[in-house]
Image 1 (cartoon, rainbow, N blue to C red):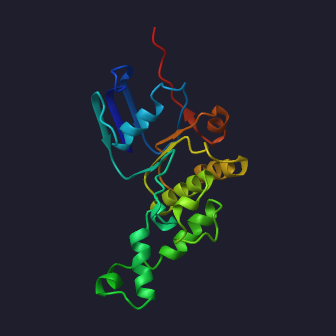
Image 2 (image 1 turned 60 degrees about the vertical axis):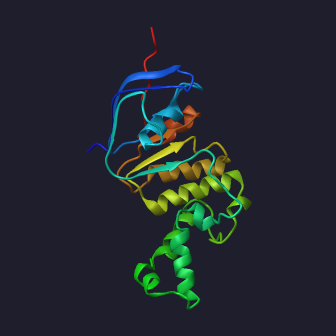
Image 3 (image 1 turned 90 degrees about the horizontal axis):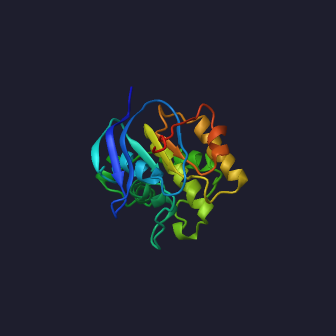
Length: 215
């Protein structure tokens, strides 16, 4: 089964410089590493796959859910860890119920499994015990990246798009990323974008697809 299909896709920079053209690619239950020089269009390709950007020409078809780990997550002053994990509203609903302030809608829509799933996801990325109410802006760059990985574990999308996930991580945290990729229970990893070719090769079963050089 193919989750992503690119048919004759082309993309260019805002000033019109062509990045790639006639790109045909299918992504199924596999791991794919994108390796290339700066400015070659790696992040642009991920944006096209995610639907965050339209191609200059060609089509991108998507089946199933897509999860994206961004290079620099948005950490506003009012955001909590629960919001960064994508479960802010669900967490607030449970909090209202615990305080005795929940209404019928809260009781009907409550996800009683959320606290256990949140705790497990945070433990899996090395953030065990971190409070859901903690201000997101207090997280270091590495902690924010780990929290982004935890968000993906909670959401369990069909396709993962990771844009340089090890940029802000130390050696221990990079090992966490590689372990998560090797045992991801989702059916596919859409793309893994790294600058470190060694890290790409270490992810078990990871292939590398390169755009042929222009003549």
